[in-house]
Length: 106
Image 1 (cartoon, rainbow, N blue to C red):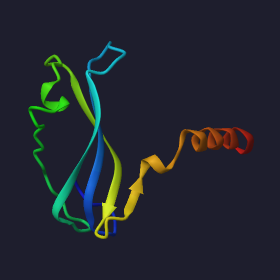
Image 2 (image 1 turned 45 degrees about the vertical axis):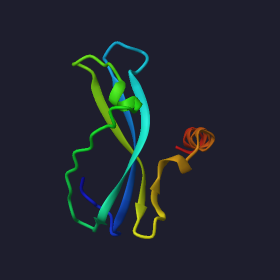
Image 3 (image 1 turned 60 degrees about the vertical axis):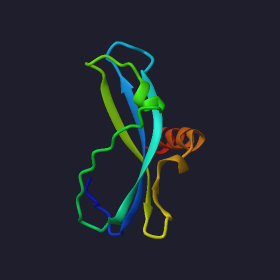
Image 4 (image 1 turned 180 degrees about the vertical axis):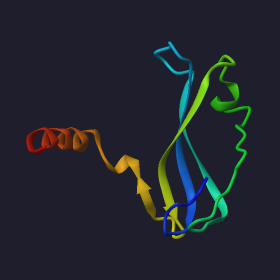
């Protein structure tokens, strides 16, 4: 992970999906987060090896070897635990309104 912001990052929230091509329902979709010890300053990079708890849903999913794990960042907290980025702040209703406005004015 690389911090391409101009602020320090203290925690990152993710949505993870384990899915197989051709299946309409993923094997597992779940949110998780990671608190960065010491934070990640602007421009810094870090590599993490996050292992699931074997007693959690992550540790018990029985996906085939060809399944794909996709991770999406959903929120990034700054040093003061404030949201620097929050994908959940943009609602489906707001997205629908934006699409209507684009059609009308673009």
